[in-house]
Amino acid sequence: MSRYAAAHASPQGAGDSRPTALQIVKDEGMEGKLKGKVIVITGTSSGIGIETARALSTTGATLYLTARNVIKAKAALADILEPSLTEFIELDLESFDSVRTAARTILAKTDKVNILINNAGIMAVPDLQFTKDGHELQFGTNHLSHFLLFQLLKPALLAASTAEFHSRVVNVSSSAHRLNGINESDNYDFQKGGYNAWVSYGQSKTANIYMASEIERRYGSRGLHATSLHPGGIATGLSKYIPEAEIVAMLENETLIKTLKSPEQGAATTVWAAIGKEWENKGGKYLANCAETNSGNDDGNISGTDYVSHTYNAESEARLWEDSLKIVGLTDDQ
Ligand SMILES: NC(=O)c1ccc[n+]([C@@H]2O[C@H](COP(=O)([O-])OP(=O)(O)OC[C@H]3O[C@@H](n4cnc5c(N)ncnc54)[C@H](OP(=O)(O)O)[C@@H]3O)[C@@H](O)[C@H]2O)c1
Image (cartoon, rainbow, N blue to C red; front, side, top):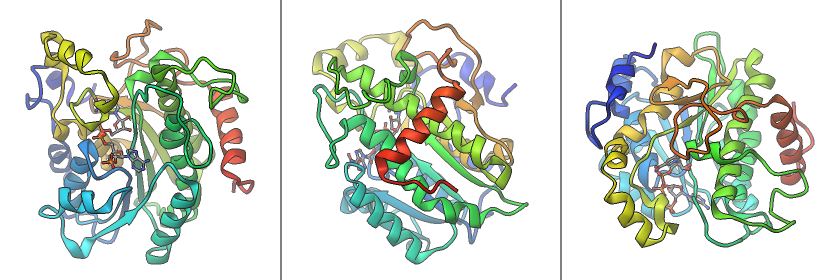
């Protein structure tokens, strides 16, 4: 039973008694305890990425904060972070070239990365759009570029792992993965038609989970672990593609409003996965509400916090891994 189960039993809306990311750092006794450790976080210019960075800065770790708009990220975090422990790295997940440049920049500054948090994302892009490399925008941004970033930082993640402090990857997924799994190998980019904003988002968020589970399978025994998670429902820039009328309807739904978390609370499960003692030497799990998730029904409920039948699927995890390697142009997977 999670120590936070009671706090999540009857949510009362953003800012209620559910823990914030900062609370997690305190509860884990990690304030100032990660000096000399390196944490890379994507998507730190908005939403829960800001709060993830803010909370983790109190651990004393050196933070490599990536954003496609570094000026925006600096403005959001300037007053919070210790300049000597913070590096801002430009990274546009719509471009493999940008991912490669960002990884090179990070690796030129450090040969060890202890924690990688793949947080950045986009949701429900209404029409079929493509990244600079020609992949469907949500699959490319949310999954493929994070997969490439992980592969490029993998030597540094493995090099950083010690018996006392195993390395970790945290993939910020979503309960929206419950909508559907991943497409067939020849249809990740909806080449066969039938693009749908939510099916595409669901695919990309299932991919986040599959990638984490496969990292655990392949590298767990070498001291590199990975988890994935649903952060909760949080009012952030992520909803920019949702039609105004739908937002208004949501804001009138009192039951839904009560489930919403503040950005500070929305970053809590990420931080728990990244530094919590529970995940010191293991991974391969999908988390929510600062706890491992339970088995739920395949009800297509986009906000249910349980896992569903396709959340764990070793065959699909392996297929996505092999396909992703080919797509990003890598063969060496050791
Ligand atoms: N909010 C929720 O209710 C919720 C629920 C479930 C899962 N999530 C997941 O939580 C994560 C964070 O979302 P959020 O709610 O904090 O949303 P957000 O406020 O929109 O922040 C998303 C972050 O990702 C960045 N990003 C988007 N496209 C990018 C690209 N091409 N290259 C680099 N960075 C890019 C954004 O940069 P810009 O500032 O430049 O746009 C921003 O920093 C996402 O993975 C999302 O799927 C959120």
